[in-house]
Length: 194
Image (cartoon, rainbow, N blue to C red; front, side, top):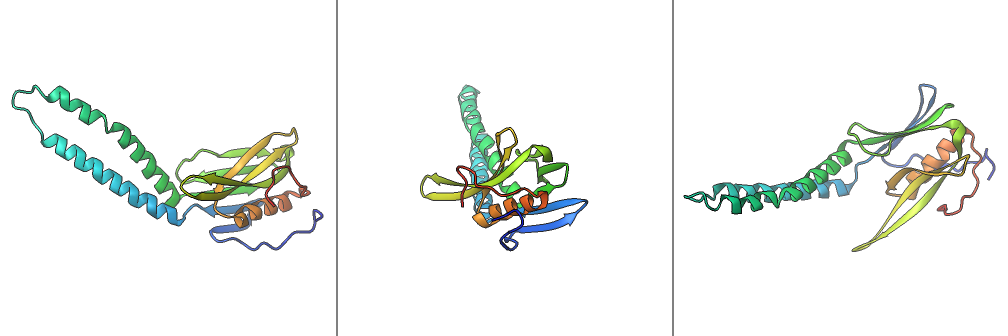
């Protein structure tokens, strides 16, 4: 395939693309069905914690001797509160967030918004050698397959641009459209998913 030959991949579901403000802008919504599950799980998680603390607050010792004993039951669930906060934030990001991939003749920008999330990047156009897609298979209770978009710099550094993409169509679309816009000749990369 030459740099001028591109497959018509079509716009994947959950994505939009525009040529705006002197550059290519691709937006990807984060929402998936797993966000409904995590929100439901977070509600149950917090329901348990509210019940736990309600029961503790109703216990009293007449002489006050058991108060120090109860302290451990107040402190122990704090780690569960922290996990619950993380779970709730993850769920909110899934419902609200989008990723902006913006390519222009100066930079390639990756921005997650409106809620802050790690992974925002700005990479100078002159540093970009190649984009490529990697498949990531995770083993646990089942097998989960996600996709990542990586970038090779002119100096040979590998930078992960995006991760946890649910299908190869989204990853391949991002790779192809950014390379096409920036006129990067597509060449095979070791470890690339094809």
